[in-house]
Amino acid sequence: MISSPKPVVLLSNQMLSPMQQALEAQGYEVARRWEMTPQQAAEVRAIVHAGEIALPAEFLESLPKLGLIACVSVGYDGVDVPWCRARGLEVTHAQGLNAEDVADHAIGLMIAGWRNLTAGEAMVRSGGWQKGERMGPRPSLRGRKLGVMGLGAIGEAVAVRAEAFGMEVAWWGPREKPGVGRPRAESLLKLAADSDVLVVACRADETNRKMVDQAVIEAVGARGMIVNVARGSIIDEDALIAALKDGRLGRAGLDVFETEPTPAQRWADVPNAVLTPHSAGGTSDSVVRMVAQALENVRLFLVGEPVMSPVAA
View 1 (spheres, rainbow, N blue to C red):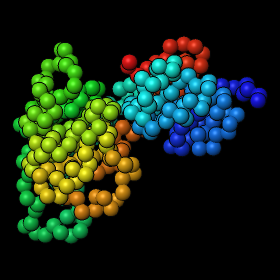
View 2: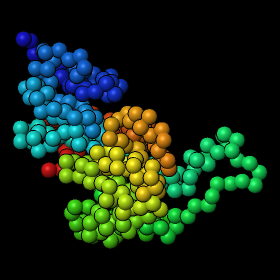
View 3: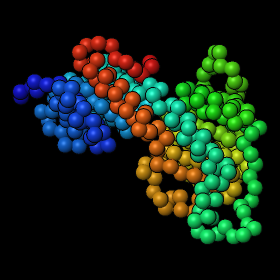
């Protein structure tokens, strides 16, 4: 078998196809997982990856020269980082590059759901707005309590925005954060019970799968709202849908789902839910930065220099 004269870089998913031209311009041979040849598999040095998609161990083991998984996304929950590190594989991600955009989206979902914006638009468009008739009044956000699950870059950006609206902010995460000037709840359940709006903004892993369960959902309650801009795996989606249908949860704003794309029929009769298609971090500005960082991580790795944004050990 003849080795490629160029370093072989693998695109793990068809959604990353637009990166092929940029990789080739840097002098790499680009393999595409969905049509990769055995010869390419034997030569792959780096994978450019969408971090939420699972990379099975048996697949990684089939790439004998692999040394780097460069996630274009901030999240890397589809990659078993300890497994990779134990085998000498480096893992990078888009560290903090879209936090402000995701936080904007979280606040947008909160406002749209809390103030019935989508329902109001539907009323106007359908001709349901008659003279003298308006939708029932909703409480304002000022003075309401917002709880943040996960006070990383996104959670912190959400907190800053919520405070600008006059909301009281608290947070919970599994580890203390010295120097944080906001109260940390003793548990996620206590945070939920004390919050009018609970924003899920933490990194997903096996420790928090379906952590926002029926008890947490019911603690937010019939007058409260849950916003998720993290990963769909963190919420028990069946429990959330059931709670919305029977009024045990007031509202939800979701950008991420248990299965993506989520089936339309799953949400057809679910009330008081604002839904977007995993688009919170996908602004034209942030995507450019994320792609550029992934490309630079590949370049640095292949020339033997330290990468820019390794996943924290």
